[in-house]
Image 1 (tube, helix red, strand yellow):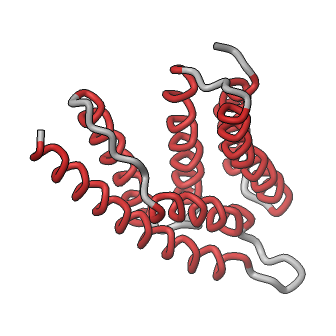
Image 2 (spheres, rainbow, N blue to C red):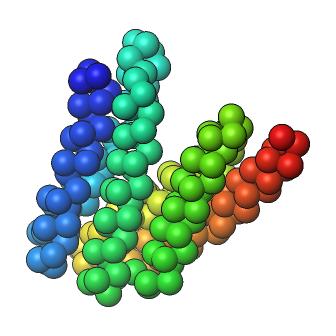
Length: 180
């Protein structure tokens, strides 16, 4: 139960209050620190999966907590960015709403013994979300470079991928549910 991959997942969950606290006090230094903690937390998501699969450490708890930790991390950061006025609320609402919808559909599908794997759009969405949130967290101009523009472009790409993958997930769910 408490193996290295699950410990990394707990570390990711534990990093959320620190990121929220750093973003609560906006400033260049706190934004930079928040971004570094966010990057480290995001890397634990990559590592825990690799380690769990490679060393046969996959657990039921890990299967539940890992995606929950990802959603909590992304949603918490987005909510703080909206609170700071660094991200448009509607973007966060659509992305978080998509995550809630897909999670609900996964639960219903699992209850009906239906497996719907994430498609490549969903995986790309996750990558673009993490990459987009980094410059949005950084926010302030650094050495004449404004990270906001890049963050806004990337978050809109992540939004499009979230919608595409969400629609694909709904389509797959209903086609498989109708067969049962």
